[in-house]
Image (cartoon, rainbow, N blue to C red; front, side, top):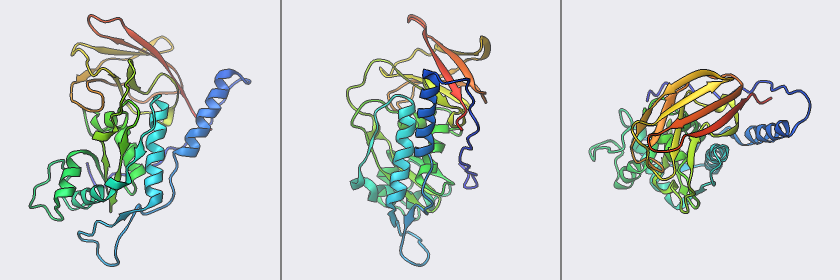
Length: 287
């Protein structure tokens, strides 16, 4: 991932509806929550001793932690998932990970022991974390993880959306690099069903990705599974690729749907030997 990544917050446009209705009230509530929880506090994300930081891992600022966790849990709420909590006892290791990644020539989950700013704690955290470069804050990294355009497996997103309750995470940030603890995000008491992004129901269009994903919570999905997406009855995209990597709850079906407009999108998942799964995603433009 290039360190020249340009990050831009979503700009919301007007959503018009004809008269009050239950769906419009739901849309207003959803948009209000997005506008309240997506923004972040202007903050450098971390503090360190005066002078060149070199291998000073510094400290994550409280506002950076709060913003990142709030944005992560907003995405999880949009997908009908339980929130995760921050395990601050792991922040020092994630900071060690971040200073290590900041000084590498490219991100790595398995950094060499000869790497500049190497530490056992940082390397261990890197092996169990989502990694991002070219971001000013951990909250920006969360958005990159959810878009996940540089990872064909969408593994970062799948960890962000690991189902269950009681999951935890921790953030580290140094310079332009973020580490986010991932393996602990998979909670307990998984309910039967699936995790999709975009998820069924109302969704803020400008936060949605080009790559759509569907992951059964039981972790299994036939390689022949396909996704079909239509808009007002017209086909938009069909096919997809099943990635069986153990990210989040397990296997996932991925389809490049591209840019979408406001409106209803009907999704059908077809898997040999199983009934079709069908749901509707209603994209709206928030004011």
